[in-house]
Image: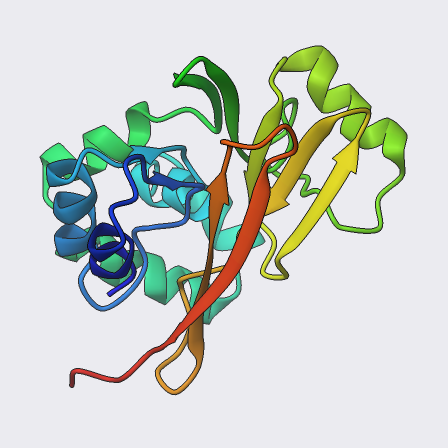
Length: 194
């Protein structure tokens, strides 16, 4: 629904900040993102899913039974090709879009397991610029959407599209056509298809 919504508005570039493969149809979601050429970075859940067979013992120690069962279901539902594709993603990368430098990050530039929050110190945001220079940062990994401007760089956490039925998928559209990019927060109700 989110992809259809932004496509109807003529948005030219779609990005995803990770954690795409755990849900009722992980293979379908991956195929859809690949078919629509969405720029994707690897979320921590995506990394766990791609490495489930190789890291099973460690994951059994660090995940609760429910999270592990969810990963196992998703693993069985994913094709080998899509698991390999997930495993090949990085947690951070930069893109050039219309001459604008855009960083996609799940976590922080230096760590896929540490997440930026709206109330973090400016210094933590500055560190992202040192590691991965850009003007716009699209940061995934936290459920709460936010926008911060630090020293002219714009940091946006779009929220999460992965929600239970009855909740809303949150996302953002970012326009880089102004000197300071603008963000429009969006949400769509999630309805169960079961």
